[in-house]
Structure formats: C-alpha cells, structure tokens
Length: 185
Image (cartoon, rainbow, N blue to C red; front, top):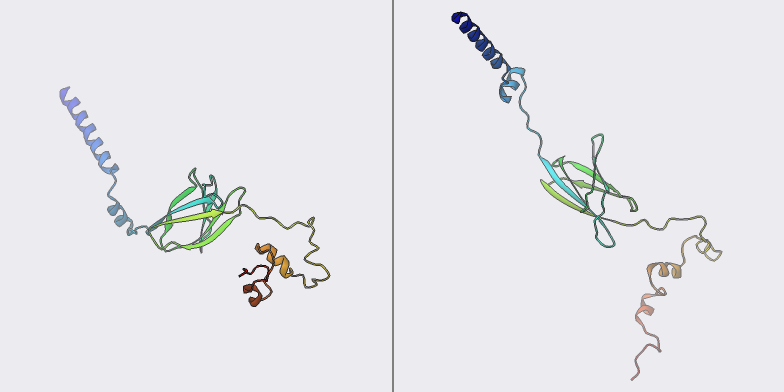
C-alpha cells in the first residue's frame, strides 16, 4: 500500500510540473520570434498641457472642451479642463500637426494649429466673451443713409468706433494747434 500511495503522489507531482511548464509564457522576445514578428517600439510622444483662461481676468475656465484633431488622421480626442483650467495629454506623436479647438459655454470658440516639435509643450489660451451679434431689429439706417450711398461708414462714424472724438482731416492739421489752444506769451 505505501508503494501505491507513493506512485500516485509521484504521478500527480509529475503531471503538475508538466502542466506548469507548458503554461509558463515565454519572454516577449521569444514569443515574437516564434510568430515571426519583430518588436517595433512606439513612436516618441509629446506631453501637451493646455491652459484655458478668461481673457478679462485670467481666471481658469472649468469644464471647457479641449479637442485635439490630428491633421491627416480620422477622428479626434477630447478632454475637459480641470478646476485650474488645465488639460494634459501625452499620447500625441512628436512631430505631428494638430488643430486645437476649445469650446466653453458662454465664450467664443477657439481654434488654432500647432506642430508638436518638442517632447514637452504648454499652450495658454485666453477666451473672449461673445461679441454683439448683428440684429435686424437694430437701426442700421446710418450705414445706408442717402448721403452715404456706398454703404461704407463715414469718416466721423469710423472715428467714433475707433474711440476718437473726431477724425484728423490731414497730417498737417493734426499737428497744428488752434489759436485757442496755443499758449499765450
């Protein structure tokens, strides 16, 4: 009886060792050689940090959609900015050309093209609030008045838009002073 127990245990140990030896994976290099493949390292990547700020006070914009479009590839990658207005990605290949698009609720959409030529890059984007939109309900008679048949704004209207009180008639008059403004001797 002891011989039978010993032979069963020996058979069990041998079987377990054989199964364990077959189940052990070969190293990565051996696996590729057996299949006929060669190891190809992944391309170098750029760590890109995008900071989204408000233009008026430089405070961060939270939850802005930061979208990376790789030029020439289909699809895109989108991330949200954190509480510091930052979004970081480190899977874009170095040397690639991207179009960066930022969309935030209550701000103008931003778009810009960049070439990822360094292993680590940082981009700061300041977003504006939306400007006044054209409305058909506003009075636009000034631009198309009879004395301005061309439809272009007059010089005095253009000066008001530029923040000047009155336009300069010529370079000579701009530099001269009127008699009321000249100092008395």
